[in-house]
Length: 225
Image 1: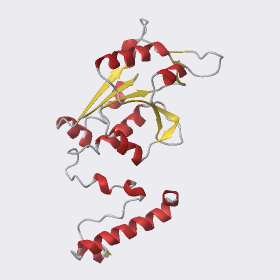
Image 2: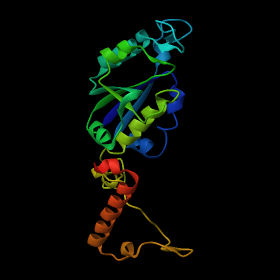
Image 3: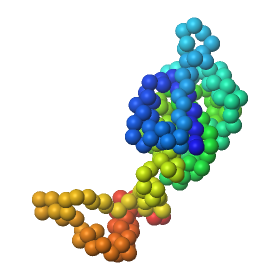
Image 4: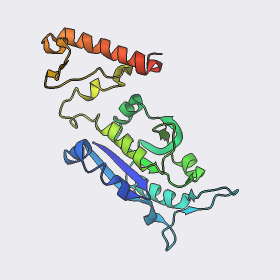
């Protein structure tokens, strides 16, 4: 089983993503445990504020070191963590290879930033890996954290009904996935490729590989480099 501990100032943002579909099923099956921690519970003031003005001036507010440190230390006293991940636009872009690697871990902590960012000392002292979901800025790290959890948990054996499904996804083997079709075979004159109806599995797999290669060359030639 894999466990995710997610630290955030907005736990409500993560209720829905983890309560439906594959992630819900993974938790019900005991394949994954996802625990969301409210950072404000570790604030040192009555207002439960966890941010302050940045040293040196400038716009925006910075998430303070103390609430994060208290929460992280508490969690670390309860179990050992294989990774402490900070979601940030300047991190390494999440890839299928990274998701595959993380799926072999046991306990993962994820820190969600907000406002202008978090005190650099948290990143220096505690964080083992910094991840981004793309070259753009979001309001906080909650949605990126949900993406990481989804990408990783679906790889855990027993989570998907079809054990081979995750292995044939796009980016597994560095290729995009081939086109997929379902019933009806003929919809208003738009037909499913005849090879997929042939029953010849070897030819079908060759067709899928050729189509995956073609799609990758057209859309993501950088993956072939």
